[in-house]
Amino acid sequence: MVGAVNNTTAFSVYTSFASNSTALGKSMTRLSTGVKSVVDDGAGVGISEGMRSQARSTAMARNNVENSISLLQTADGWMQRMSDMLSRMHELSVESNDGTKTDDDRLNIEAEFGQLKSEINRIVSSAAKFNGQSLLDATFSGGVATQVGADSGQTIDIDITNMASVMSGVTNVLTTAAASSMISELQTQIDTVAQARASIGGLQSRFENTRAGLLTYEDNIRAAESKIRDVDAARESSEMTKHQIMTQVSNAMLAQANQLPGTILQLLG
Image 1 (cartoon, rainbow, N blue to C red):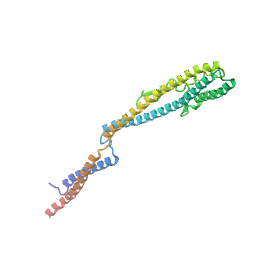
Image 2 (cartoon, one colour):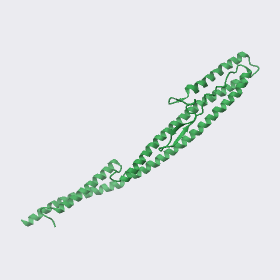
Image 3 (cartoon, rainbow, N blue to C red):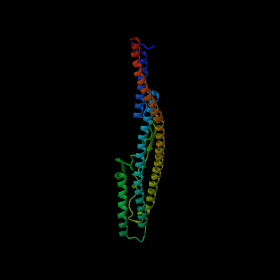
Image 4 (cartoon, rainbow, N blue to C red):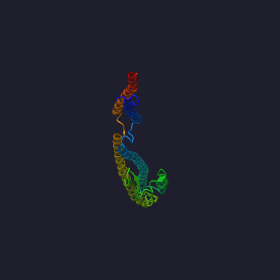
């Protein structure tokens, strides 16, 4: 029964109108932001925030891995130059260990030999660097930890052999005896550099596999977070359309309900 003073029908219709308007506003907000709010899914938002943190930290760890790979590539590039020069010095030692060579010949050979020795020492002591850090001295010998994951303890040590002693036993090729000794010494140092490069290659391969794993993990965790946090646009668009229609209908019914008391007054008049 409709009261002429307290229009309960109009109030009931207004309640429905207000509810539909609120629901419409929420749908529009979800669609405009693309994500659910803490009001929509408090537990889900909490879970997704943890996943977002993992994804961001994983991306940073992947950046660390990329830097480590670049460092190792730089170190290997310098070691390649050292290996090339050691091979040339070995050739010069063989050339000098020849009874047909004169002392002047050996002086000429020694001139090149000495320059190559000086260059290798320069590379080890100052030239071979990455981000200001020396690569071939003791800086990375024994291992320097790099964070390669989002969680504590997920590290890999960068370990580069100390090359400072490569030239310690290298003297000269001014005589056949000295040249003969250098043939053996230089072969040893060529093998030392080769072993160090093999170690770098294995470590670089490890970092590259770690990078691939981090990419997969980051992709999966972002996808999982998206399923929890992101709005289903198709479903939400359907809900918004329904709320728009219901709001329009409620508005029309409210106008009708507001006219009911006037009808009763006409009956009384």
